[in-house]
Image 1 (cartoon, rainbow, N blue to C red):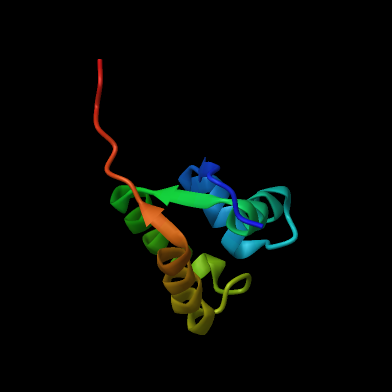
Image 2: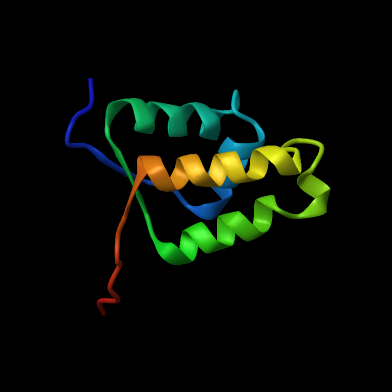
Length: 86
């Protein structure tokens, strides 16, 4: 059952979730998807998309799965527009 909970992940956690689904970040990300809403900024999405596309990660996430992960991330997340406050 989904709740009103909102979850935010940094780029490193999302990259780990994409590459190693059984990892602690992977399980935390799946829990967030199952129980609430994942908040994502455009900047974070663009960084994740670029990082997981690096050739050195192909053995963990083949190029043909890269698009599926980023597509699912977009579909299952809510984009937030963070503002800077000082």
